[in-house]
Image (cartoon, rainbow, N blue to C red; front, side, top):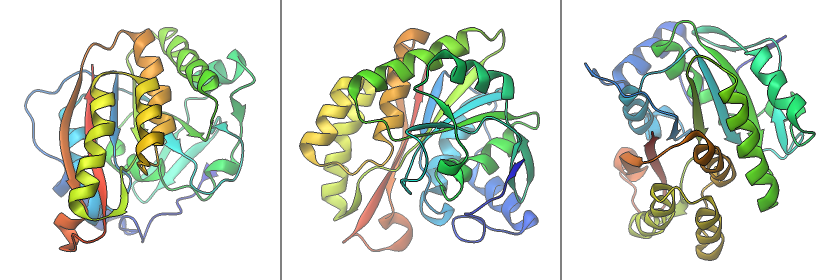
Length: 267
């Protein structure tokens, strides 16, 4: 089973050569890269968010196995939907699913289900792949679309993912796909996003969920981020570092209605 791309030609180039050139241009040359437990990167069109995504992925070592946590924009499928078999295609080629690790997660608790429907039209995980493919040629992934609402289940999901990672002898990176505030004036988006980023830097999943709800911050990947923060506690993350932040106004020139993009590394 091959999951075909739905964002090629809109969020990023559909032509293989054009996509390779676009990703190469967005990535930065770094002689020393950090080993990280997780990163947060944005998933808008590369014209808008590609610089931030490229910077954060350039900053870290990309291991052979990556768990991708993304929001479910479409509402299709289950609340913790694991793409558990086959591969994901982009114009750069196919990325196999780490079926063994996916099975460990699914078998751990009924909270996680083997579900491809949630991924059929969802772009948030797909747009991460060309960066990861470029940096790691032996890449395997476990894509998980999340729309869990209950805090207790969000915490449980994080613990299960952490325990699954601990079964592996080799490193596993968690990639959280999320944009920040949507369609606000630039100054307001920056101010609201700073409140959410503060909780991310504190490694506080409960605080993040509370602040986002209280302040009305339209961070689409808040649930994946909270799940990751719970996992981070179990995995021993000690520090979060903001690598980049921009709004779409930098690319479009329109600062009256922007989307925010943050790149954060957790290690």
